[in-house]
Length: 366
Image (tube, rainbow, N blue to C red; front, top):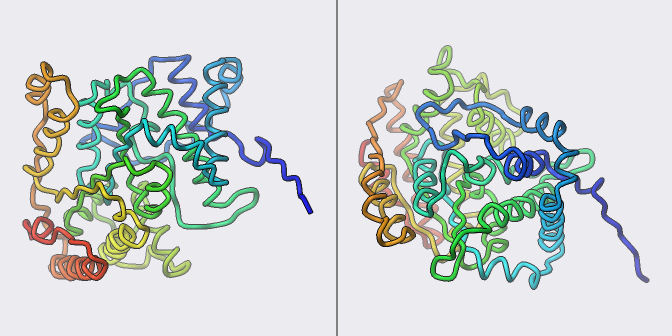
């Protein structure tokens, strides 16, 4: 018995981020982006602005032939992923090298992503956040809601992202036979096998790792400073991810009654377990970078040696900004001991699966 199933754009609607990108890239062509400026970055939810822009400009986008071709390509990729049409993914996988910068927030990923784009001659101010940064695709813990579920949404987002990347990098000169496509991809840690299989065996992972005390304090600094009585509070994107992950793992507990660092440590520890359990480290091309000035600087310098034209390498390397790290002072006396215990637990878990956690580099300042 044959059953005919029809999917329409009502079942798989185009994402507002996709429409907004097509408008900004193909029609407006003037918007500057600030994802790379981590010193002045405000942690905020921009989805509302993106949605408003998409609604305002969807008609213009619908009349643009290149935009329509890209939307169709997004649907083709989405269905290829959804139904395992591997032959339709092969040409993308064999000609593109995706380089994903993965790591807990505030661990140096934006710095490396910025220099990856600069090393392939991209103007970072004219590179949209949806292409470079980690808001899209948006892998989240599984949930099912009216008209969608997290897995289908991720599949659609991935198809759309690849279509956007193909358009954005379409004029790039291949390097060693590949179009280089960098991406800061914090949340691919939760869906490692998905990203590995969809992007193919040529994809690379750069994994940044920072001590939980330092990354917690940095998150506090970027989210408005210490909270009242050191209790957890959701004020920023990162804090919303912490809240979401703990509730996903522990049920709908009221995290705002919990100690801030205890909540952060649960998030940090689960994130680094997920790197292993999601299958991300099954990728054969993984480099790990502890949050140390010389390690991050040398990694960035290596991008220019690898990707820049030979006559440009020297001048571009001199433009690399130093990555300055400082020892973050814990707000409570037990933070360091708790953090070091979490590092030891993660290292033990990684070792049990044959992976080496860079303990020495992570503990250097603590």
